[in-house]
Length: 263
Image 1 (cartoon, rainbow, N blue to C red):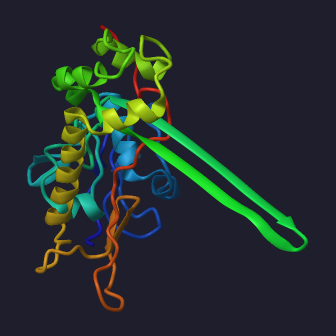
Image 2 (tube, one colour):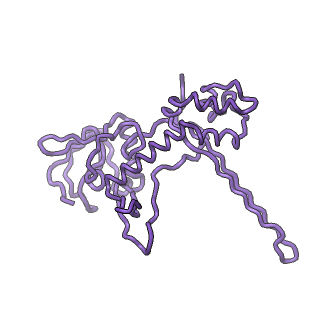
């Protein structure tokens, strides 16, 4: 990567272009700014910092002036983003890298039990049980498909009178859904049109990322890759068959909404 020689004006943040570990990039700073070390950026990840910048008003979108990119709105420069092309989605709401995740309705249950008994040196009981049930639905999708979801829950005996606000308040321990068995409610949430819509958006975001970075092979399988600290690394094929596919979307392990919902 070509090392910058001109002074970098980045008064609202962004990843410094270039490569190496020394202080080789000239820059002008605004009083009150705070500069993170390269190690800190790698530890927390460019996506995390881009989200923080967007939450505080930054756009994460470089602007061109005189043939040079300007960073008054913040955002990462160089490495992955500099070579990936379109960054017009930065700072908007969605599931692509550089976007701000929509508010989520998060629900999760995890249980693990293990029983191991021996008698006379022989194992007489060896039992393990793992239950993991949950998911996350984007609030915009939940609102759009609320009728279908509410009608599905109303089919459960004893909950015929619930409404949409009961669904929204459930993760916070409020509303008339409190007390419904998780084994009953969570499958209904996962099978809802709202959950399907969120899943489709997440899949589309992954597809766009893979296509933009030429990660899809001619036979339709996906190349092995890793992404860390704003850098994409495509792994060399090993052995026979397709390398593993890594997803960027993980269900948060929490029973709270990511942001309080109000009406």
